Image 1 (cartoon, rainbow, N blue to C red):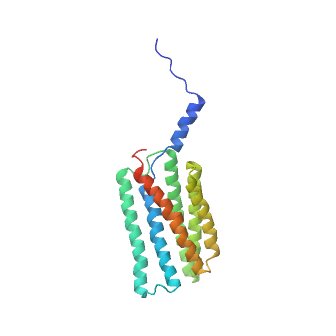
Image 2 (spheres, helix red, strand yellow):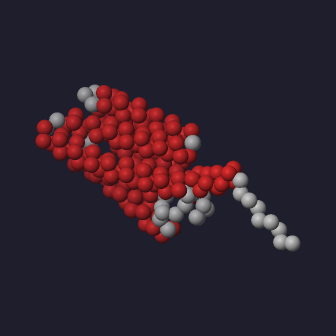
Image 3 (cartoon, one colour):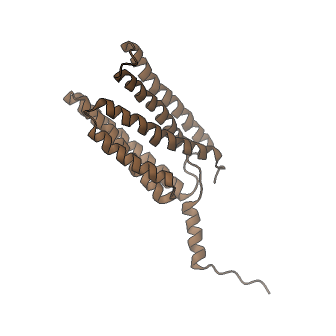
Length: 214
């Protein structure tokens, strides 16, 4: 007699659905590089400005401009490399549902960040008040905190929750320190290394280590 087909229990179905949602998946290289390179490069730029504030760095204006522009050029170059690599590997549209959801969340956060930069940049120029521009960093960290909290609810990784809480605290601190340039730079420097570069390194490590199509 042919064997009777095995009936799936509700527990089997639940386990199957959970494997789809919580499956491994590798983070896209673009996301990893955005955080790692952005945190390191712009953290270095903030350190540079701290050095200027305490009188340790006294470069000519042209040299200062070249350094700041060089930071952005370096970041965009690295980001371009990461985007091209992701496309070559099949992009971020493959993998488990949770990974694709996170990719969408961080992409949406990036779009919101662009809007924030435009709004506060135009406002600062219109009102001739540089402090208005400084508020944009606080909003960026708040948006990042929201994205990382969503990541934690899906993945339940402790470092994601720590990053979300750190981003929230940084957003509040920066918002309160816009009239205190030295302390503002100090908080921003630490936050870029700890809340951008460090998570970026974790994502970069996972992006390189995870098998394709996992």
